[in-house]
Length: 193
Image (cartoon, rainbow, N blue to C red):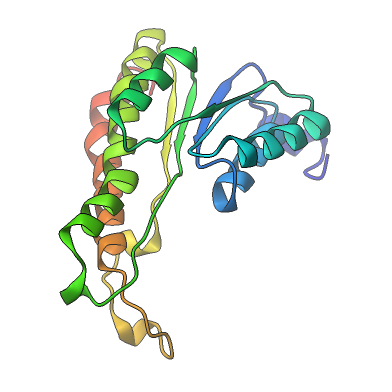
């Protein structure tokens, strides 16, 4: 173990089952492998099955954990509902999947704005609605909504010299992701979530 015996024991997730959205690439892949290293059994979710299966094989081979892969689009209500039944018992929900649209804020279409919000805000909110009540009934659960530093500060171009980009929907959606956590925390904490 790269973390060492005692440190790894204190971080052990053995016996727990974690669901990670966007687990096939990027930050989600690293989160998923971190959960695997800590001993959690896993459910990987993403729109494309192939990258999920690649990460699952690595997690199984390297850490010996159980991994279920489910192709689903968290922007679709029917896929979220299906996740609720196919995923089984979930102790840790990690809402990681994210999207961004680049372009000047004045010209971002409402369709592009809504797509970013569907992935970054509505999907995580819906998965919280599906999984948090079950966690609360059991008296234990954890919800991790992957936000961003952009969710606590504005899109000030002075902070990013030399970068010519504008991602207004991402900034605003990540503020909303933080809002989900701030809203749900007092409601769920009394239930062990």
